[in-house]
Image (cartoon, rainbow, N blue to C red; front, side):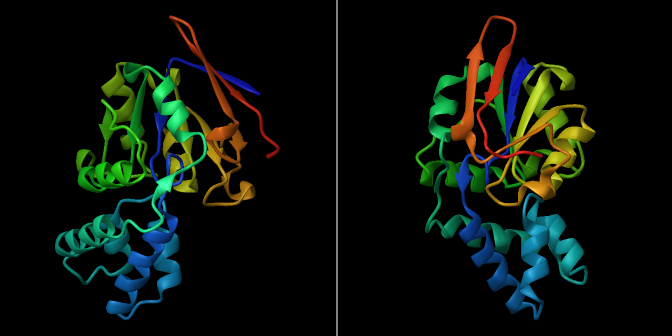
Length: 219
């Protein structure tokens, strides 16, 4: 399959960086500290801003204060945080002005995870600090498109969660889902599905980017 775009927007966790174990450790600990069932907390946390998970799962708590605690816990937990297959190659191949990272992590956390994974810090980054409404709202990806100076329909998004795919599609963008966090059947609203960025090839011209997917995953 080949998709055509002019700019690419990458989610971070689960697309470029494998931080699943760290995320789940932190949210498991936080849930137990507040006498909550960890399973639904962890499920809700994937692909969403921490503060929104706290507001939903523990509305009686001071969300701002808890969010700072969770952020610090996540920054400190770097065990197993590594680059996912194909991430380093793609980030070093694509021109800086043609891509952005759009993440539900805060900027300090995003930059920490990129460093832990040995990936370059991007010129363009939209973090949890830059939006009012996180994914699945389209706001994060719309801000990413605007940051690069492209129309939403000219952008293609790489995501790994249903909330992230929903955010991209609600913004009018193409989306390729990676099965790094969720099964393919949970990502079926994406335009295409791949196992990882290692199955993706980019070809550049002055006007467009051709995104070829060599995948054994079918919708």
